[in-house]
Image 1 (cartoon, one colour):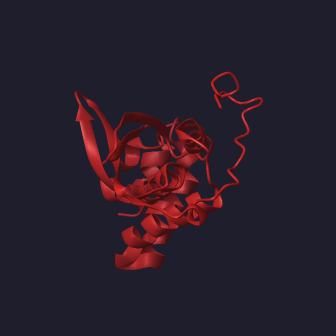
Image 2 (cartoon, one colour):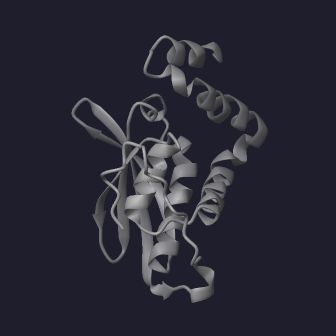
Length: 172
């Protein structure tokens, strides 16, 4: 029932700031996008990354926090994949449906593609550790599929950290 989202977000003080975001993501977008929602959100995540190209993984982590997408941590990187963990207050109500993270998956795939210069795609799965749940987004890259230099942006977004919680954490 649609009122469940109202109860879920407004009965918990730490979730109430995310109520508007939840209405858009969980009620309005499914109505508008229908069965194609996950594909469209993945593509739009890639488009968003093209509009906001970031220089490095540290900037991606900061951007996620600033956009209230959750707490992002890079947990593994090798020649063929980059594994991210997404958790936090804003993530918990949605963690039961990993497919609702396709926007974030598309964004991370495109950021990896731009930063590494390799073709990249992402997949989402639920990660359970004890009583804690989070979302794991694995970006798969193909070291043999190098992109042409003109397909990767050169003007990266300058992350604003002055006066934020990241002021002392930013590294370039």
